[in-house]
Structures are given as C-alpha cells and as structure tokens.
Image (cartoon, rainbow, N blue to C red):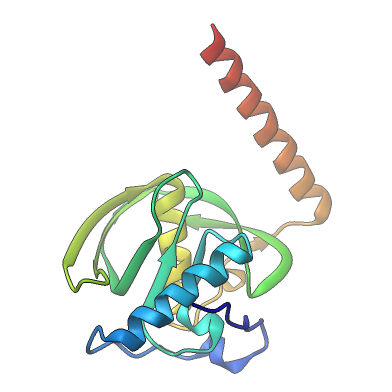
Length: 174
Ligand SMILES: [Zn+2]
C-alpha cells in the first residue's frame, strides 16, 4: 500500500466526469487500499479517486466513529429525503470551510471490493459524506454549492459543537 499525492482545487482532474469501473481486479483493490491509507493519513472522512488523479468512479469513506472503512465502487444515490445544513471541508481545498445543504437521509447502491452489489441507507453525517464524495465523481466540489465560512464563523461553529457535546456528556452522566 502507498500514500498517494493529493490533487488540489485548480487541478483540472477534479473537474472531470469519472468513468465507471468495469472489473474489480487487483489494480482496483490496490487503488482503493491506497485511497484508504491516503484518507486516514490526511485525517479525512472520505476520499474520491479524482482527488489522487484517477478518473474512476470509486470512493472510500470512514466517519471515524469506530466503523470500518466503506469501499464504494460505482456508487449511486437512488433515493433521498429531507435536508440538513452541513459544515464541510475537503482535502482538495485546504483550510476552508463552507455551509452546504444536503439531504438528511438517502439510499445508495454500490459494489464492494468483493463485487457484491450493496444497497445501503444512510442519514446525518454519513449521508453528508456520501453526497460530498459522489459529487467528486462528477467533477463537482462542495465550494460550488457552499456559503463559505470565515475563520471566525468556523470558530463559532466549533465552539457551539463543543457546547453541544458537553451537554450530551452531562446528560449521560445523570
Ligand atoms: Zn472533497
């Protein structure tokens, strides 16, 4: 396995439509293992193939909640419901954050590394990550749809998240 070089905003590879994967061979498995390693090394929660310069429809996702990394090949969203405001960042757009509206829940289909066709429901943060990563496969960056946050707005958001977390913590102790 190897850590691959990230591509950044301004690189035209991030603006192209990725091609479907026709066969899940050892090259694809190696690619996606490298994607996982690159995502974890950079403390990302998701990574799409074009972010390392590969124009194929696959993404890796790990929301850092203790669950295993999702390896999604030819993923598609087949249903979605509700909405949520998400504060997003992107490994390809360093040091920026923006507020994006996403569906609250969705159903997606994809192939896993063993070639199984999976249908999965997701909501909240996981649904947010899936939308963000799948956009990459169509050359879309979150900054295209976001209201960008200033440093002070983002600091305020983090402060509020901290408070919510502390409240939850208190609740659990009682
Ligand atoms: Zn991204």
